[in-house]
Length: 179
Image (tube, rainbow, N blue to C red):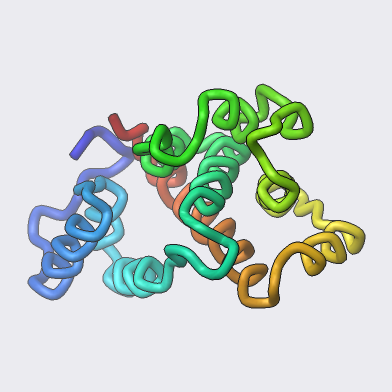
């Protein structure tokens, strides 16, 4: 666990929350500072745990690669060092260096033949949904429904929202980048 943040974790964490931290560590492979800080407010810790239990792994055409593209795009779009470190782990298993440049906004997705139309649209949607103000047009919605089922679109929207939630919490508490 990396320090410092704006606050330190509580010295005493109730057993049910310690158990939740253990589950989170097993599931994510990381003992994150942000999870420990949430134990200051048990409702937030439990709510975040429930949300994490619902995170999509792969649904239909939205496979692990596409989810990695989406998570890394959101992390870069909202400029969250913690999220970039967390969601960028093992990127080499799913993406090329050129594709990472696209999700970081350093390269145009249209130039890359390794991305298909659905992946380009997923990146564009993640960027638009992460922008302030949110910039999802009716035309984009129509393109999304041409490429993705209703379930797949819900997976996209909730994945973007989940990464956005963690970005706001991690940055709001001053959590540094992982690794």
